[in-house]
Length: 82
Image 1: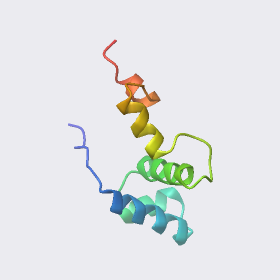
Image 2: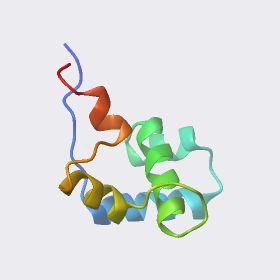
Image 3: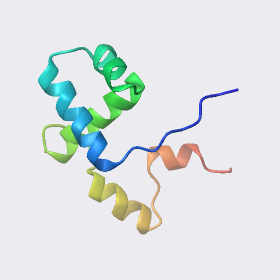
Image 4: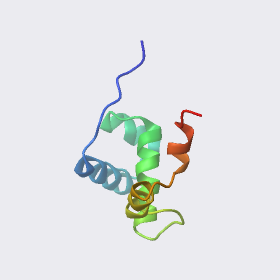
């Protein structure tokens, strides 16, 4: 049986990214200390960098707008029923 998907608060995600960036640890080591998946920590860090203008991509707000307007993001297209 697979692992149950956990939901993290925005505050936890922000603190996790801050911890990773300040710790000097690898994604793997930081994720283990935070008890989260390495891929989750990587994704949160990547999105934080986009939101701060440090990296190209859709910001969190732009993603929300796109979804509200009926647009699709890459992830929502993957889960499409067709």
